[in-house]
Image 1 (cartoon, one colour):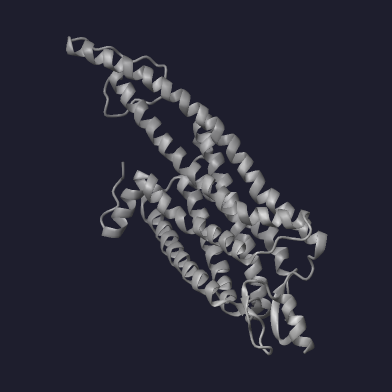
Image 2 (tube, rainbow, N blue to C red):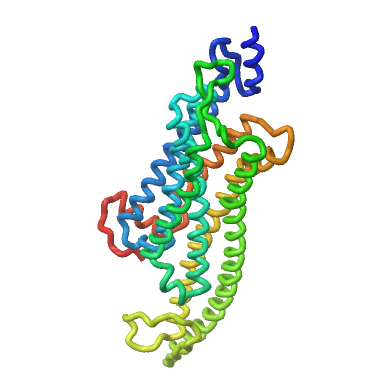
Length: 369
């Protein structure tokens, strides 16, 4: 009788009635919603991210700094999906009871935080890379290369792994309350306010700071690209006037206002029409990359906000907010972010779309325009 009374303390509206000799488990309604959604996101995320990595590896035209950082983000997304979704599927059937022992408990927590921290640092990396490429072209010659990006990613992964390592030692297997023959995985060394401080530091370092950096950088890039659009409009008028003069038999040489190199196929100076065409092509390419990366950052911010916000709220407010359906929704948003990124690349990047076509049709990897 005492066991039955105590067991109700560990139930919530999520759990259906279980036998007295078994720990409480999620209801069939919860399983019907959670399990198909989790499996779908896992399969979509695995196929999408693995395909993205293989396409970039195979296509020489994608061996740029931006895509190197996106490959790092793809691996981080894979870690998030593989470390989180199987645990949540298990929870849907068994509740919080743990089956894989101390090693599985430590590894699950470690890789979960590793993937989370790597995804945010990868976003910061390609955001800064775009800022340097557009705002500091001389510095970009040295830093916005594939070789330099690989070095940055190596050190980022190394530092993040070292930072995340303590999570291996703060979790512990503990007997399930009132069911000593079952176990749960808990953060035994991070209780009360100490645990809240750790979560708040994690939120600031790997959510607030990356988003603030992204907001500042993309605001500046947006102003620069808007100014360049005005320049392109002025060039368009000059090109139209040049075309009219050429039709009358005169050719006007373009001024040296813009630092664009003359292609080898031109044996002489650029005309105003040539200059406009090249500047417009460069600007359109930058705009497409800007839009793609901006959407990636915006979706990351939105998808992680409910989960991060819940952690902060529960650290500052008493009693904490506990709702299993809200937590499920927050996690599905996180997993959808990790699963959808490759499809954003395919939708918004013409170069990747062509490389993907070559990959799926096993055609030759010629240079992609």
